[in-house]
Every structure is written in structure tokens, then in C-alpha cells.
Length: 251
Ligand code: 13P
Image (cartoon, rainbow, N blue to C red):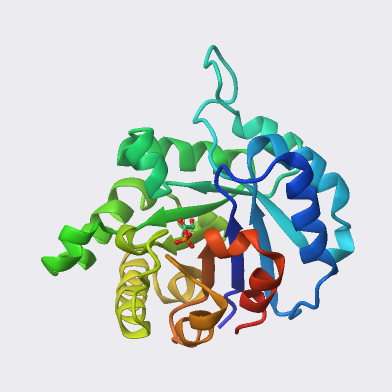
């Protein structure tokens, strides 16, 4: 099994550039498990200055939190995937529930964004996950399956090595409530089986599936210990370097 163990921080709209540089530097200087791929999803404005501060040897990678589906054009306020690629930013987070909710990003738009990101050589962290009422109704697997079918499954098998999936139940984001390790394992396994059906066993086995939603150092080890959980996408706890370092080292 060749899939990577990944801990990614999603800083969302937090930190000034100076604060972001400080946070990234502290993470760079911290003791980190060499087996964990570390990614920092920083605001657009921070990508260049934070990148300049990170040493290549630190193996800390940067992610944008969004990109447009076109490479250029009259799209005021948007950021092109080609610009991110030219800046040598390796990752982009797409489909986060906050963008689906506040920016009305739907499955079809996300399919275009994924394609554009991949065409530019970016790796995509694709977020999926259900709201509370769907979970309560027991329809979470079906809901996530539809999200994957509608946005992700147009990706050709040859590009799947550049896809990371982040399962983030909306009811666990920023709420302090996490999926239990069993709940996480159940849906991660279901997602892996969807990948298997669509792309075959090798790709399913090689795709990292991260859990997101109130991950902290106190719960990371148990969640990451599940066989189909390959790391985490961390919001609030990624803003504290010591806490984030503990999560990095929670494999
Ligand atoms: P929290 O870790 O703050 O719940 O956020 C999760 C998240 O949305 C990461 O993308």
C-alpha cells in the first residue's frame, strides 16, 4: 500500500501575513515525523511570502484554498490555477463546504475547477461531506457518493495520483464535535470502495483519504489509527504551531 499519510492545515481566513510567516516558521522548526506529508493551506496573499520562508529541505508544502476554473479572463477577484502553478504551489483545496455554502459552489463548478487544477499540474485536495440532517437520516454514504460522482469521477484514472480526498462532515467543522473513529472508518471505507468500483483496487488503495472536522491533538491519534483514515485536514487546531505539530506526530 503506497498511499501517503498527510496532515494538512486549512488556515481559512485567519492570520495576517506576518502571523502566517511566524506560524509556518514555527512548524518548520518543530520536531516532525518524517513519514507525515505536511501541507499548509494558507490565504492567497500568504502563498508567496510564506513560500519564501520555507526551506525546501523542510518538506512543508503549500496549498491554495481555492482557484478558478479558467486560466485567465475577466473574473474580478479570482485566482487562476495557472498563476498558482507558475508560483510552484503544489496543492489546491477544492470543494470545501464553506465555499459550497458561502460562495454557492456546486458539483458541476467543482468538476470544472478540478479539471483546470489538474491540467495545470496542481494536486487537488477535494473536500466532501454531509450536513447534520443527512447524517441523522442515515444517508451520509449516498450523499458523499453523489458528491464524488458529480465532481470527481470525471477525472481520468491517470490523474488520480494527483487527487487527495478530504471527508469533512459539516456538522463536525468548527463545532468541537468530531466523527467517532468508527463513524470515520465507516465512511472512509465506503469512499475507498467507491474509488475501487470506479477506478479499480490499485488506485483505491493508493488514494489518501483525510478526515476533517474538529481534529485536535487529543483525538487525532484515535481517528488516524483507523485503517482507511490517511491523515487529516485541520482547521482551528492548525493555527497553533505546538498543537499542529502534535497532530502531525499523531500517526
Ligand atoms: P476545524 O478543524 O476547525 O473543525 O475545521 C475543519 C476544516 O474545515 C478543515 O478544512
